[in-house]
Length: 251
Image (cartoon, rainbow, N blue to C red; front, side, top):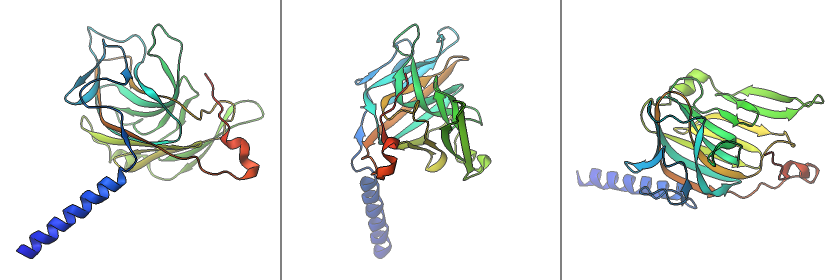
């Protein structure tokens, strides 16, 4: 019995060590108690149960999508957080920009989407920024044709239905976004959901704002906790591809 207990204790120690190693270099950007470092409309955003909480009701709707914005910026990074959504649609904006609107909390740019429904969780959406960029189970390479229109080269790496099985409804899920140069990958509960290779040099974004979305429409509640981010170095590029790393932005 002592041997079994010792073995179990060793296994737990090793697991804990691996978890710490996996998080090395990450910065917590939400203290779990206040909205320090974040800016959102206080009519909709607060801290409840240790989580950043966005909520609309029938009596208190939002006119248009509204966001709570982190004071830092995202370039090349690994972002990890937990989320829970009841009703509606939400997302995590990254490399984003302030957009025109009736207040200061309007955002556009890349979005790691998720929802209470069955279709969009895990996709890459361009909020005020080219619309749906890559669906679930797809690796999508974006280019612009001679006609100036956005073109998508799509490869399937997993079935949409299989990815959907990994996502829990009205419960906590983990979300991870890895953005390095113009290669953007999303994961939910450690399952890869989509990947974008953005070669649209005129429009793509190399850095920008991080924000969390509260969607207009029916009443909804969305929560975020355990938010941490790690800055990643840029990958070296071949001399012939120097333009690939240019800091192009579109506002």
